[in-house]
Length: 295
Image (tube, rainbow, N blue to C red):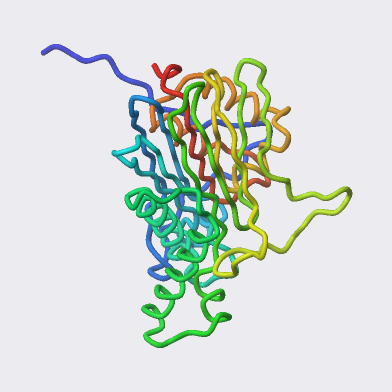
């Protein structure tokens, strides 16, 4: 009988000092039941997408569900990729539900506007639609009409969402965010990460409170620009953004190397689940490449 060659199992990626090793526990049946990890990957004629989301060590240990979420679809008529990333606030009792609902609501609100021939980057309207969706979801969970404070206590979440539209020189990107999740343009050749939104720190002070949906900010944080061939758009929760920092360390070097070209979706999830002491939050990363750079 012919024997097949044994394929070695992937070893977990360790950066610097690893976190504690333990067998993850299943999440309790409350506040949503997303899988421990998920990933996605596909290409259109203009763009290649990869995304992954993994449960952090803290939630694995304390039997809590992954509270991050991501969603992406293609608007067929225009070739526009519509995407969202969200991080349910730890203070919310159904944070996993809130992040998933915010992503779904934002993506489909943009998609509906594109269907109607309206600008997909009517982001203040999209934020209001997402906040209303969270209100309806909270009402369904509570089986009664909730007040604003009840909605926040149940399903509060950050949200980064936007569009990538094919352009003459690359991808025309439009983004907005509510809360402290982030976005960067990565130049893999130089291992440089250009943040598209302000970081958590302001001088010597570091913000600890996060204002997320369902609160609608008076002034929405937005960014737009062209993603050139050879560069990568990264949209992520702070579970990735905090260990990344300014991108000059080991985490930045690891992802610059492996995101130079689109990796297999499962490999991205494996990389994202790296072990490093003190960094134990959920991690979600969505990446976009102009199609000319796809392999």
